[in-house]
Length: 171
Image (cartoon, rainbow, N blue to C red):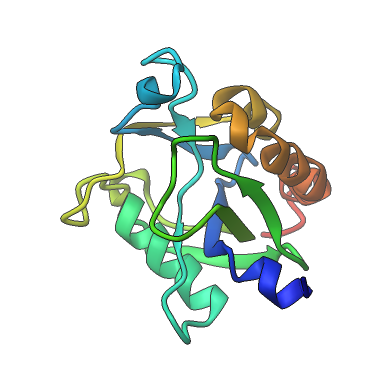
């Protein structure tokens, strides 16, 4: 099987790690839960904004679109993106159409607007019912187990950027 054949089994997806000026990150609490997978209803519900990439859609465009749809945020600056795809498999019994998992590109963005811009009901399909700022390192413990490895990779990838933001160098 070629790499293209393998990649074709994973849904193209984009995620956004949104930093504020204090270098804290946006966490949204999912409206749904993973109780059907045997997970505690209230556990693992916090995550970063993410969603599918439309056919022929540029990854950066998809990142801005998903951020706006899920958080209402339009005042964000793209800082960097992961260079390759990060992938995870869906657990048994959790299939989305023909996909066996998702492959993701992740964008790190800096929030440049007022907090009043955050509107979880900005889109007709509400993804989150609550939000908060937190530390980047918290992310793997907050996400469902089948996504934890990807979140660990994100923390490793974006820690240096977090430190740059914290230093005030991105004024």
